[in-house]
Length: 608
Image (tube, rainbow, N blue to C red; front, side, top):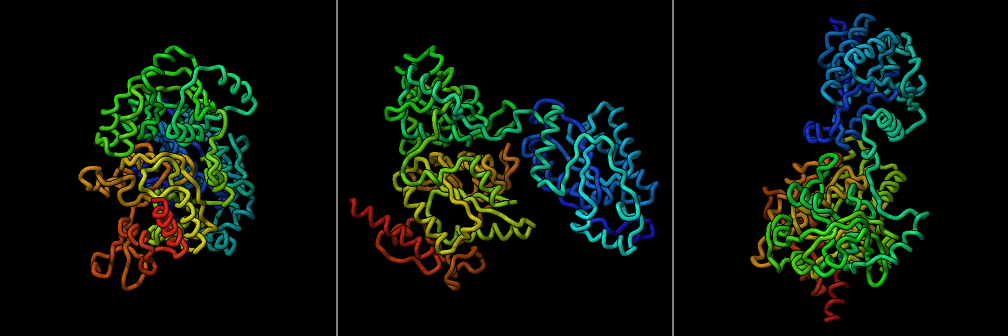
């Protein structure tokens, strides 16, 4: 099918996976010139665009500036005056090669996805780059013709077979296979992720991608073959007795949630975090909360000059801190920067003010996995274990929901609506990570064991789909530091493989201990996340206000035009109903889940 100017109408614009704002966050954040062109060539339907956009998404998420040039997209603009004659095809590839050269010269990894069927044209593209002193990697996206025809998303092969399209590559026009490509991707046999891994390995070998970027998760456990030696070493070292809160942070570090940290923050890392909410060495890495080990003055004086110290919890040596660095714990300044207040009635600030006057930083070697033996350890999945779970479930999108409270049907509505929206965007297997916080929480929060029972009841009642939901425990303590802390919550989920994060109303907030007003603006958490640097591979799903719709007798998204139809059931009212053994309105919470809550508050009254 041809227009008068000879331009094909079988051209469909392909949307990028990476937004301009996301790409703009990462250009230039890693030192070193990485300009090059990755030239993907192969038959229509071989998977060039899919691989190209997936590689772009991967590189941007690792702070490598890049841009993907797609064949259809280019023909909507720069090359819209060209058809598919041999002369026009040659000019099409020449122009693309020149544009790719400019992108590469600007320091970007330029990924091109074009059939480019003729060896002569591809060699000309290579020459254009070589003359400019720029790396050019020809990658043959090799899928058999029958595989490409079976995909045929655009229906082009069918039209070519019917004679409606003349000169179609692979049917009545030859594709000249590359003689010596830098890489061959057999997309008929490999998954997209396997293809991306091969491409990343190539770029790593060519020093385009730094070697430290590829390993996202830094676990700090001693390798099994060195464990006995490390345990013997730990038994001979001077020790620091740590608290339960400290051990929770050891677990966070050991499992890799705070990657690339290698241990408790040294002063340089600490200053970067409290002043910039990021680690700056090796790129802009979002890390908004100090992860530190407070120690008393007498311990600091006793251990000053030690090459290594053991960390001991309840008489058991759990880790070694190598080359410890001691620096002043300026508590008031830390609190002012982390929380925006220094009120000693704030529960976490109180613990900070009562902790040691010095901080001990250094590399951690954790002797074994942290177990709490509370019947919940099977839910404490590490980032690597979660990634493996997502892979086993064949998830093509993972959306995370952080919570420290029981789940009501308003929360469930937000999660199911997110799933629906992802499916509308073309994702086939979105998986929900229901990820309750499992570290320290303030005294009036519902304890973890009761929350886990309540979450199980929500799944049992079918409010959330158990087949596409993973319930796991996030080991971090809760700091109640509002928008500063919510960046930590989001970034840790990003490390574990989530690419969508649902942000709620007033995340990580609480009432001011003295005024009882909200300590933080309830909307600021979501706004800050949308602007935060370094969260490059996660998309923020903004919170939508849900309330009880009295006409539907169900939770629904609030409609200000029907304000009188809605009832807002606060946490205070919910707790009051549960304590008195009363039921909330039908549709507010799954019945089995509500029963768990009433049992918890009844147990409190018995204890009192």
